[in-house]
Every structure is written in C-alpha cells, then in structure tokens.
Length: 217
Image 1 (spheres, rainbow, N blue to C red):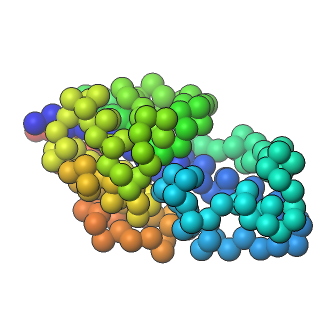
Image 2: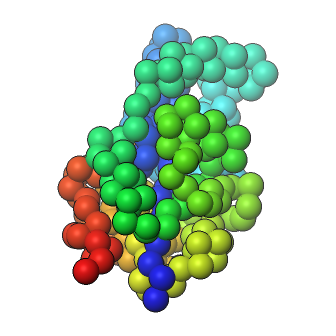
C-alpha cells in the first residue's frame, strides 16, 4: 500500500496560529480588553463558519469598529509577526527526509488557498508538497473531506498514511479519513482532545520517518 504523510498547516508546519492570535491579543489589549487564550483555542481547527469564537464579531460587540475599520489595524499588527515567521522546529528536516526517501507529501488545511500557498512559498516549503488541499476545496475539519482529497491526489492508502495535526478537530478529521495521526499540541491547543491520536509529541523534532514506520527497509 502506498503511504503518504499529510500535514495540517496553521500551527503545525508554521506558528501562524500564534501570530494571528498575537495580533488580535495586542489589538484588544491596546483598547483595554483581554483576549484569553482559551477563547481563541475553541476556534482552532474548525472553519470560520463553525467557529465558536469570532474576533471580528467580538470587536464590533465591544464597540471597537466594524470589520472594514478593524481589518487594516489588525493586518498591520499581523504582518510584523508574519515577517518574522520561520517553519516550526523540526519541520524542514522531516520534509527533507521524506523527500529523499520518496514519501509523498501533502497539506490538508481548513484555511484559504491564498493564505496557505502564500506562506508555504514564503517559508520555502511549497516545493515539498505534491498536493495542497484547503478550505477552498471542501468542508472544514472535523470533516475528513480535505484529508480524503489529499490522499486521493497522492494515490495513497488511508490506513498506511499519517496525518500531522495540532488540534482536536484536525485529529478527528484524520481519524475519520482512516489515517493514523501524530498530534503536535502547542500553547493554544493544549486543552484540545488528543486521545484519538496514535502519537502525541512536543514538537516535530520528535518525529522521524522511522518512528512512523515510513523509512522503508
């Protein structure tokens, strides 16, 4: 059976989730309001439509402005953080090892294609992935749709393949697609449910193809 390795993007391949949270946290703080990490955490891993927390709606509720007025302010704070982003620790060595051994690689992310592709290119990671499936292509996690599409593109068998995720909904999506899952929680997802993961690690530095059984003979 052909085995693939499929990654979530935000918070998994790069700390974009922390960057976005940090920008919003600063926006609210400068205006005298708190943004607890627990509130933000509840929206990680699901699409905007199904998210239980919406910072745009929160800003309007607090009288800080409608989206058209708030967006350029938050975007300015965000760009400073995005400019400093690097791949998550361990991501590049793992991708390089997979490429050397011919393990097909994909991305399954609920974010928009423009967001994911922009940052994959900027971080120098786009070259590793034979397929990139995003929220433009199907329903958000915990639906397994994006993982199924990625596996179909790669010609890989779900039971032989691994997903790499940072959120509870992402783990649920990969499991529903029939895959095994590595969970890599970070400070914004430590309260998520990861019992469905086959392996939980503190960073991608702890993940090797041999540990996943993908190193070959």
